[in-house]
Length: 396
Image 1: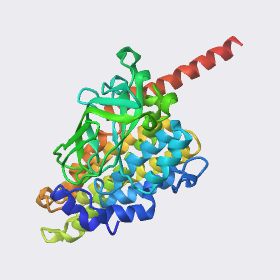
Image 2: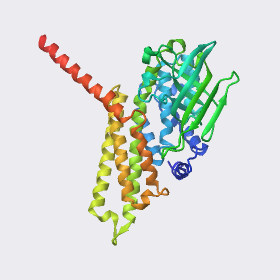
Image 3: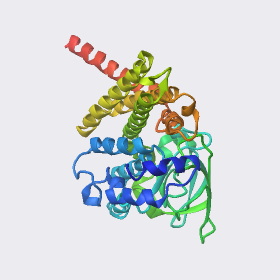
Image 4: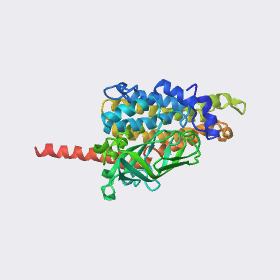
């Protein structure tokens, strides 16, 4: 965090690409391999999971910068879990050590112009050709696609759209790493992949891209699971989403912690009507509510991380993501309010916390989708199962 924090403001204010001066120390610390077993070059356990460590690291990095540090771990988290879930032994041996080393950096291409949370309806086409697949179509909101050298692309490999999620596969697209806000990669075979970043109010540094694939060739060896993985891409993708949502809750806690600490410092120094702002009851009430939300979300996040380590907590991961991300919006708003006019100035860090926090409720599962499709459905299924069990016992 000592390396990240001094550069975070420049990256945000000038919409710069995350520099190597930040990426290399993170490689050296092994943070890209947190969800990869030691046997494959990562820092994770060979048996089970260590979600708690991932939450600890993500929260600390996000306190320094959500966009330029805390969010860098999410992409290797999702891709490595997809590989662990469905990759062949050769694919695991090839890619996992490289992902853990942060070379190449990676990005996740799921969302499309017409489909976001509705993953089962994705339309980017993969057509069979000699030795591989030709990709045609578009992806959007692919964060870090420029700098990344490896894209995890969820692709419709079954031309029958009625197959739904069973027609999806995960393809690994290799490309050069580009700085900046646009790229144009052409293959010797004639395939083309272009990307253009989407201007955003916050969450700057990695840049989120619109991508266009035009007869882009992906070899058979880069289909996760190869022939056996065709049609299973939805499940491989979902394998990483629980960890991604836990990471997002940790990112929210990191941003809240940064906002609270900034507010504590400012209200102690700022004098209003001859007294420190922090001496007024209204200010103390705001700070107390901010601290309470942070404490509640952190406690819940670490508790659910332990549940995930023990093999449970999948629905609860969505729940804490929902709560923590909405709380981050509220806490950063109060932080900005406590700073008054200075909070609205771009030179103030709390203005960055405020615009960065707003994206948390949108990605890794929009809050409406989590509430309706994940949490609500899980609670209903649990209630029905309990009712059926009770009825069976009554009959017996």
